[in-house]
Every structure is written in structure tokens, then in C-alpha cells.
Image 1 (cartoon, helix red, strand yellow):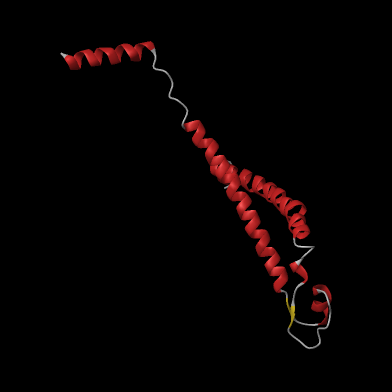
Image 2 (spheres, helix red, strand yellow):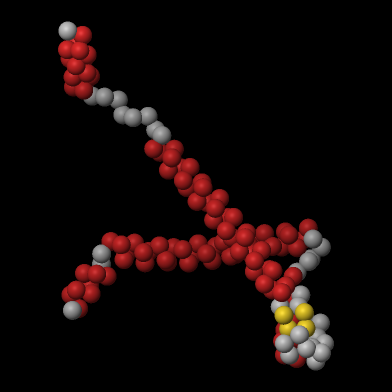
Length: 136
């Protein structure tokens, strides 16, 4: 049974999937940093420091706090601003991934569109013989 499991775990698909998950997690961290450390501060500077993550609607009269963390301690609060921030982050991440994948696909198509290799001398001679036989 152990031998069977080892064979299963070492199959190409399983190892490829494991590598993809690790690379995906690392890439996710890079994109998250890009959004959180570069894109969102620029958006904040353009909009005058607008940060939706603290916007909420109290669902109880006991909630009188001015920020979301304190409001959650006081009672129920609908944190729609945090949801909106995460949605914007998701859209930015999805767009960045779209651009990266589109770029990779473009590179792949560029390799495929390269000129076919020049025929060998033997292939040229065979083509000439074929053409001569067609004419006769």
C-alpha cells in the first residue's frame, strides 16, 4: 500500500499540481502586495485618502462607534465598506492576472508563429522529383 501511494504521489500530474499550487501562492502574495502596497495607495492619493474599509451600517442602536472595529465590539454592524474594498481588490487582482496570462499566451503564440525550418537538401530533391512526376 505504501508503494502504491508513493507511485501515485510521484506521478507527473500530482507533482505538477503541487508545484503549481506553491507558485500560485507565491504569485498571489506578489499580486496582493502590488494591490495593497502600490495600486491602492495611488487610488487613495487620487481620491483624497478615501478608504471604504471603515464604512459600516449599525444594525443596533447600541452601536455608536466611529470605526468598524469598535462598532463590532458594541454590537451588530453591517461592514459593507470592507466588502466593497475586498471586491475592488479582487477586481484589480483578476485584471492583473488577466494581463499576465494574456502576455504569456502572446509569447507562446509568438514562438509558434516562428518560420518553419528550412527543408533539408533531401526534402528539396524529393519535392523536385514529385513535381517532375506530376508533369509527366
